[in-house]
Image 1 (tube, helix red, strand yellow):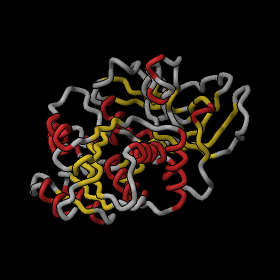
Image 2 (cartoon, rainbow, N blue to C red):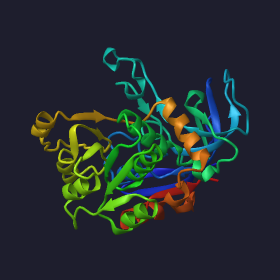
Image 3 (cartoon, one colour):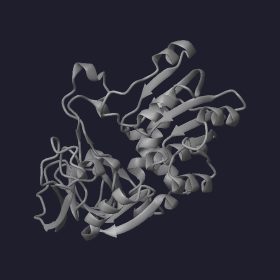
Length: 337
């Protein structure tokens, strides 16, 4: 088979690879599409070389068909169409408190172990979620990031009719905005890229460029003075952290979605003064995948408009270079067959 290997130094190579024998409890997937995640881009930049084992196949936003079942696997058949929830919980630590999706010994499949940017991929059967036949496999590759958005919105305890601000209009921010809008919220998205602002407005979202307008004043106008019930910080930059505490109402909620690898300055006085709540949100749980699949299958979210490019596996190097040079892009998919 063909597999795409990250070889370090911003380089990917398609190589011939042997199909790995199945272990008990695993399935072999014929990978249809693998989306390029922001984490994959971090790997491409060399920021995770201490974690990945070079050369390594990466990728975790996968849609596929089952090609073969390992020993002991039940409830699945060859040909079933699936999305993958790429989490391999390890031994539970006492501090995990039953939350194995964020456990201390969790391995993220496609980062800590071999990923989906290959023609055939072995994964534990417990990671699979069934895709309905009416859902295209291209959209199926968006289920994993959509599940992130469903998880974030769920942890934010969103109620219909609430006012929501999403700071950062990249793929995850846009998906959070769409899920919140679908659940009955009024949504304003803060984004600096003109193309992403235009896309947000075309999707029925109120969009503001904080470099050109006063974001606090814009939210005040948007909410008729009430300010936001719920704020999502998805930008990952200090300016977003500065804004997030200025936008909520009294006892408002802030969901931290972005990965801030280095400590940031936070206005803790605002948490005291307005009795704010800060909620961390990481990855997803099985129910978030099921909600994402149901939402995608309903056709009520314009997910097709978020796909910027579909390219063959052999053009992956060019895709990663394009992502670097074109920050306006949204979701890039690799066609693995």
